Amino acid sequence: MELVKKWHEHYPSEIPITIKYAEKPLHAFLAGSAERHKKKKALHFMGKELTYDELYNQAKQLAFYLQSIGLEKGDRVGIMLPNCPQAVISYFGVMMAGGIVVQTNPLYTERELEFQLKDSGTTIIICLDILVPRVTNVKGKTNLKHVIVTGIKDYLPFPKNLIYPFIQKREYNMVVKIEQSNETHVWQAILDNTPAEYLEVEIDVKEDIALIQYTGGTTGFPKGVMLTHYNLVSNVQMCEAWLYKTKEKQQIVLGVIPFFHVYGMTTVMNFAILQGSKIILMPKFNAEDVLKTIAKQKPTLFPGAPTIYIGLLNHPDIKKYDLSSIEACISGSAPLPSEIQEQFERITGGKLVEGYGLTETSPVTHANFVYTDRVNGSIGVPWPDTNAKIFKMDATDEEAAIGEIGEIAVKGPQIMKGYWDNPEETENVLKDGWLFTGDLGYMNEDGFFFVVDRKKDMIIAGGYNIYPREVEEVLYEHGAIQEAVIVGIPDAYRGETVKAFIVLKAGYDVGEDELNAYCRKHLAAYKVPRIYAFRDELPKTAIGKILRRKLIDAEEELHTS
Image (cartoon, rainbow, N blue to C red; front, side):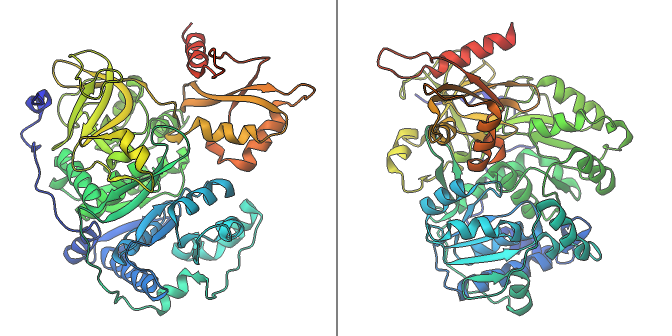
C-alpha cells in the first residue's frame, strides 16, 4: 500500500518535500566553509576564538599526524572530549584521515570505557589530560596503540591558560604532566610540528562509515550504531531546510548539549559548520554560566534538552539576563513539557519546538514547525525525504489505523547502516528499509505524530540514555544482592530518574549509602540510581522472570495519584 504522507499538506512553502543531498563526505562541509569564510569566526571557547581558516588547518594537521602514526582507512579513533575546540578539530580531522569516529563519553568509568573500546576495536584515542589515568588503566585490555592528549588550557586565552592548571589541581586533586613518547602524543606538539598536508582518502559516501555512535539499541548493553557520511550529510541538510530562516543572516549557535551525543553533534556542530556559523562552545551545563553567555555572546540558535531549559527557567536570577537574541530552539532527547515550552518562549521571545529521533537516525526524523503552526504535545511531522508509519503492535507488515497506538517505524536517507559487528540485532530492527524504533505512538488525521510510551525499557534522564540491564549487571556483582531491577520513574527536572528495587541475600544488611558509593565506582554519575527500594521479593512470572512493567506501572500510579 502506498504511504499517504498527510504531513506534506502542512509544510510551509519554504520547506522542500525532497532535497538533492550533497554526495560528498561530511568533512567537505568544513572545507567549503573555510574556503568561503576564511576569516570568519568558527568557534568561541571561554574567550578564545578560532577562524574557519584556523579550524580547517588544524583539522588538516591532525589528519596528517594520524596518518603518520599508522592510521589507515576504516580504523576507529575514539574522541573522549567535552565541547571544546579539540572536539571539533578531532571529529573532522579523523574523517579527513579516513578514520571512523567513535564518540566516547568523558564521564565513562573504566568499566564502560573498556567495553566500548574493545567492542569497536578502537586503536587511537584523543582525550583530556585528566582522563589519561582512566585510559591507561584499560589500555592493556583493548586494541589501543596510541593516546593523543590535550587539555582545556590548550585553547584558553592569556592569562586563563596560566591560571587553569591551579584550578584543575583544586577541582580534580591532580597535577597532569604528559610527555611525548611512541604511544603518547601531546596535542600542542602535534600542532607546533605538523604540516597541513594530509593524504586525501577516497570516500564512498553511501557505504563508508563516518561514525560509530553507541546506544542501547533495543535491549541489553550499548551497541555501536554505524552512520555513513551520507546519513550525516542528509540529516544536517534536512536540518538546514527545516530552519530555513537561518539563511537570512549570520547565525551564532550555542553549543551546550554535548557533541558526544548524536543530537548535539548534528544540530549544533554539523549544522553550524555547514552554514559557516559561529559555535559558542560550553564544556558543561551550568545554568548561571549559560545565562551569562547568552546575554554576552548573543546566540541566535539554541538546540537543547528539556532539562537544560528547565534548569535555566528555575534559576532565581533569570530575569536579570537579556535572552532576547534567541530566535529558535529545537528540543530533543526527551519529551518537552508544554509549560516549559511556553515559559521559555515568553522569556526569550524566540521559538522552542519539540523534535524526535534516535541515534540510529542520525538522529532527527520528526519535528514541529519552527516558524509556522505547531501541535503541542506532538513530536511534529517527518522531515523531508523521511517516511514514517505506525505498525500494529508486534506486526511488522500491518499498518495501524489513524489514531491507533502502535510501534513507530521510519525510513529515509538518515537511517543507520546497522549495528557494528552485530548482524542479529541489526536484523531485529531493520526490516525492508524500515527502522522499528521500539517507541509506541500514533498519528492523527493531519499526519502529526505522538509518542505515548517506550516499548523498550531504556530510561532517559536529563537527556542521557540509561540502559537498565547495564546498571543491573553492576548491582548483581555486589556480594550482598540477590536480585535487582532498575526502572525509570517520573522526575520533574530530569524527565525520569533511576530507581533500583533490591532484594538482599539472607543475613546481609546493606544500606542506600553503601550501594550508592559502590555504583559510583562502576557507573557514570548519571546512571547511578537516585532511589533504592529494598524488598523481600519482586513480582515475577510463573517461570521466574521479574515483571519490570508491573513495577513501572505501580510507580506511575503512585506519581499520578
